[in-house]
Length: 231
Length: 201
Length: 86
Image (cartoon, rainbow over all chains, first blue to last red; front, side, top):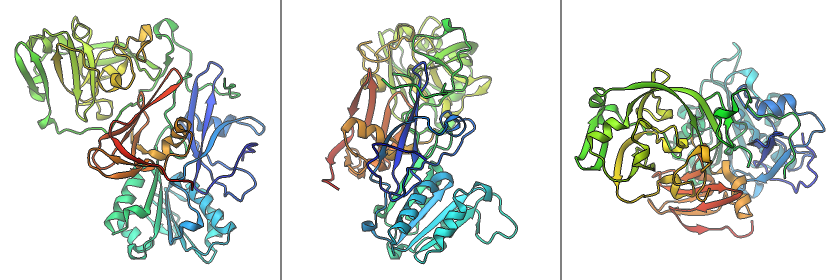
């Protein structure tokens, strides 16, 4: 959680750039989605710690409450949802791609929106599901349907989807193309491209599909900017 | 000026002989993958290497024909303009002396071109005299597509963008035509020891 | 390295252009398709940042930062459309 003195507010789905500077001037920069809703009191980033990462281990292991952090943002007007955009809304997440959707669902709840929304969230296994309890709670609202799919391992009594979010599952679980849903897809590049291709194949309107990709390695959530040496 | 982030050191470790790092470079242990486009995957039976513009006309080698040429295995340091340097990298490669001699190269400038449309320009004199190669293997293994396989240029005395990945040929020219990055503001020559990163350096 | 999309360089574009750029539209000079900047195929692990047409692969945009100045090249992008106040 961050206390940003000059924060002018954000839209659900936006991200920030975080820049770290070493004593010798070396810099590294990554983008992280904002997990909090515009109505929340503080700005929350969710950082997936990558063992071979350069920035995320610092943010998770080293950064202490009270430390300063250099931020740029909020950024991005493309991958955002506001109620005026309507629905029905399909949010399709791979792994930590769920973070901007947590912001959208909290926003949806905070404004008491009646726009029908369905979250399809693919994680490898139950322990890797981020915000699970909260998502279940948000999914209990009448307009909201939250479905978690586990692609690699699942408990014996798992009654959600088992396996990848593929064309067949999208046909069954995403809104039918004929209902003209607004679809957001966020995750690693390979996930986003597989889902987007399947949606187009199912007849979804490309103009109603919005995508955000992030690198599968060496970066945070989502989308690393080019990391550069000190300038 | 940005203040330092408490406790942040980056991934780099200053554990190498600084004399081996050109100015402004940071040592890295891994092998970052840089690319201006998607990784091309040309089937090896459709792949060939061409040198055109020499006195011998256009000379083309198939993958099979390249395999009959002599290779060298050696260890060099490489320096990327994005500020990482990797030391002691081992390559198996065909000297460009062999290929350029076969093509009877005479003109002063060379443009290398690659699958995917990438180009880079190098003076001919930098490609001869045992300083430049067509690399086929890295660390004893065939060159992976992400590192430029099946074959890439290797010109370790220049910044690594000159060592074109997925290279398919060399064009000998009388004039010096800027390649992809050279045309977008990077240095025309790119000597890391003189820190020639950008045009005007 | 897998390609990303224009969302990944939204911050850099904002810094260069002084405003939000992901919803700005542009047409590919190669295949004539219109894209929002967020939709471009973007390669950030390179000496500069390269944005390509997701359909035909033409290089639409190249950003190179030298000595603190970012130079924007638009070799294949035409008919830029800036959305008026959101």
